[in-house]
Image 1: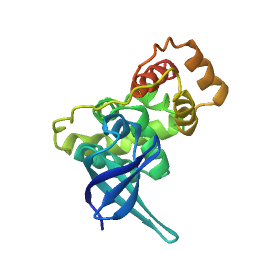
Image 2 (image 1 turned 180 degrees about the vertical axis):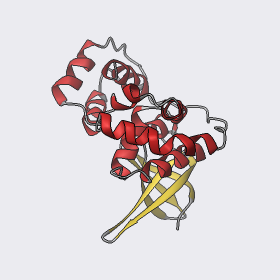
Image 3 (image 1 turned 90 degrees about the vertical axis):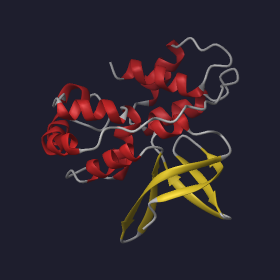
Length: 199
């Protein structure tokens, strides 16, 4: 099983990265929380969860071991697969997710696309005690951000929001309502849109 990869970023998108490790390209699915903090190029290390099914082998990568632990905990809940687990971590930081689960904040959890009230209740019920036993969160890496050039990447942001479960017209309206000066960070546009959509 692959547990950790250190390599050069050969490709980076909102859904996955390709990490070149000694000439071999590994496709690694990442949540937005990890995407925000990855450099565009250069060397990085990702904590990897190798997900094996009968017909598929997929790699999921995280910048912190805490995020990886949260991902694995989420997979242990009935009805939560890798796609939904990545979606959850893309919509709420690992530390906030821990708090929401510990406090059984069903309202906060059910505001995440793809999580209904019943799933939110099941998550908090099944994970509350496990979260309490987890190690405290380690130090966070310093973000390295990508600039948007005059709205050129807005289609990427729209695509990311749709992939997170928001309706296209809803996501488009929110993006149109944002004031985005030239040179704004892509991550800031995404965070601003998510802040409005999560209300």
